[in-house]
Amino acid sequence: MEWDTGAAAWMLTSASLVLLMTPGLAFFYGGMVRGKSVLNMMMMSFGAIGVVGVIYVLWGWSMSYGSSVAGIFGNPFDQFGLSGTLFDEAGDPVVGLGNYPQVIDVAFQVTFAIITVALISGALADRTKFGTWLAFVAVWVTVGYFPMAHMVWGGGQLSGAEGSIAAAMFGTTDGVANTSPIDFAGGTVVHINAGVAALVLALIVGKRKGFGTEAMRPHNLPFVMLGAALLWFGWFGFNAGSAFGADENAGMAWVNTTTCTAAAMLAWLLTEKFRDGHATSLGAASGIVAGLVAITPAAGALRPVTSIILGVVAGVLCALAVGLKYKFGYDDSLDVVGVHLVGGLVGTVMIGFLAADTGLFFGGGANQLVIQIVIALVAIVFSGLVTLVIGLILKATLGWRVSQDVEVGGIDLAVHGETAYENLGGARVVSEVK
Amino acid sequence: MTKLVTAVIQPHRLDDVKSALEAAGVRGLTVSEASGYGRQKGHTEVYRGAEYTVDLVPKVRIDVLVADEDVAGVTEVVVQAAQTGKIGDGKVWVVPVEDVARVRTGEHGDDAL
Image 1: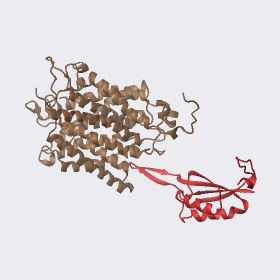
Image 2 (image 1 turned 180 degrees about the vertical axis):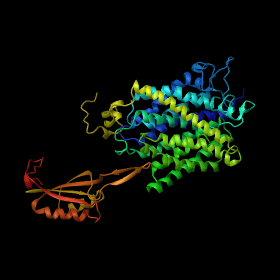
Image 3 (image 1 turned 30 degrees about the vertical axis):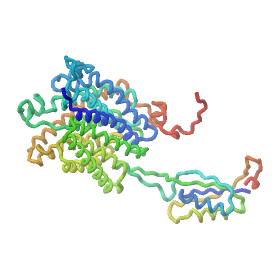
Image 4 (image 1 turned 135 degrees about the vertical axis):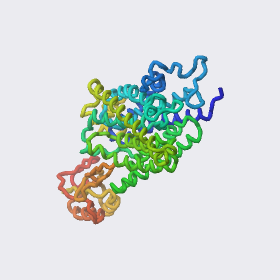
């Protein structure tokens, strides 16, 4: 067997890039919270790497790409512990999505599962028990993320395979739906999924003490910009890697990822300038992430010029959406809903208008638009229900909140026994160094 | 008798005030970072569309111990040097001090200045 070593090299690089996104997210989120809880915020991302990194090879891959149960999730026991995933019966490596060994696909996919759960932590800043968070990560990735990955990418209900919703709506030709939903790199699986989960958890866990009345300004904006830069860099693996090859599709995704993101940043800054009077660094970092989120499902379906349109729409809508939490009174602390849910919806739905061949604006009729809306709605309902059940069970058992004095005094010191900065513990005298 | 002259001024005027006091013969002073507001009030900052009012703005506080007869001169020097004419320039006030001791020698009163 002659492997496509170029594709293999690119996919391994992409997997590494996507893994870097989660520490990048830790900086992005960490800079946005107050100095007394930055370590806890960053630890939620690192904790997700630990928990999901282990779970994925046990039953994560199998539940995503193993034999399907009703098109909703893969059988966890089918390829438990990657049995049968890596080598065939003759002992040769199983071929992956591209002409490279499938173990590389495992590497690539585990990084997606990690970042998706980590994204949710932005809704839980300053106030969440670390143990409860780790338990949530384990349960939610299992019943929230893996099934969604299976439905969209594993030939399940939200794909274009035989037996899917799209196949039922539009009929099939040679086993493929006549109009297949497009989710190139995870608009539904990653961003709508995490965004809805964040909204539900923000409601279950409740507001931080002082939300809406006290100043909770970001303690380190350079961290936020560093995080945005790392996320952008990692996102090239996320999107261009989702071409599963080193080809023109990957190149297109790379360029779209840059143009959409650049446009979204400018659009966010303009929105701020008109509304608040200043173009801010936090706005630039936020616009970058909004653009990256929006192009995620669309990176392969758009062309660079149309990706600019998507970026502008995403930048403006997300900049407006982050204010909703004050209007409706839910403490989605770091705007997972405003950026990831809204950005994910914008990208997923606008594919229906802007897709190069099948979009409404490009002579493709309305079918693509309809199926994009359908998969977005199914993703919202699925993620909402799953997270509601998990969130309420954890509330009744482990409990979500640290005590109020811990929240006010600083979760870093109470939960992790550390402070990020020397002057945070008040005036302390170290009486004994052991 | 001794007086304590305290000035709360704009941070960027500190260097000028310090040199002016040195030129006027003041041999020691204490400077601390302070925050507060007067008629200037605070300012607003906007993060992701959420507006925060920052009530307290950074100030510098200077404390100088002076002999009775120098009080008027020192106060005037500080006012002159700290003045920009804009709201937020600060305040200078004077309070009587019962006693002063120099730690190194144990001297008291004006001898300790």
